[in-house]
Length: 115
View (cartoon, rainbow, N blue to C red):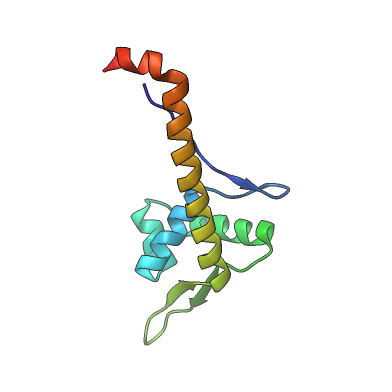
């Protein structure tokens, strides 16, 4: 037996969750929104749409991007995005650790039967 816990943040609308976090982590690593979207099998236009919606709801820019050209384009996270992503990751890790402990306490009786 197992469980699944997904953390989503809301303002008036859903504004941040595992999908945008994954996208931002990949942008951090690849320095490109297009490459991050491709790695997630996501259309570049969808990645932009998700990113813009999150920025609108949060009221902060998440990405600095440079248009292509002779040196090529690229993208980096804003300082606010780096801080938000770190807070989100830390929150998720702490909730997961607590959830694991609570899950074991509440479902221990049934967990032993599924091994």
